[in-house]
Image (cartoon, helix red, strand yellow):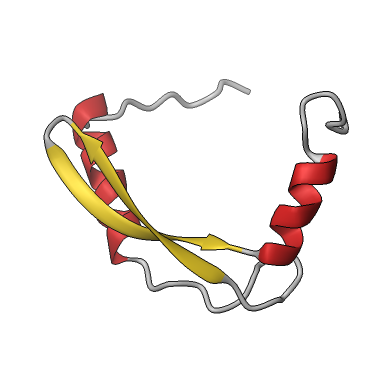
Length: 79
């Protein structure tokens, strides 16, 4: 069976700009998607090609603590 191919008619610059628009429009997550704990939000500014977007990054104190201990390059689990 022959695979279908497709082309993208959006330039990488337009694609990156669209990602920034989508990220800045998302509502903040109230709970961690991994463990369900309440999250803090860190205001972050992203820019690409002169376009600036402000987003709130969710930070889970519980998972972030685990990441610092477990998810270092030396301790990273390989699938």
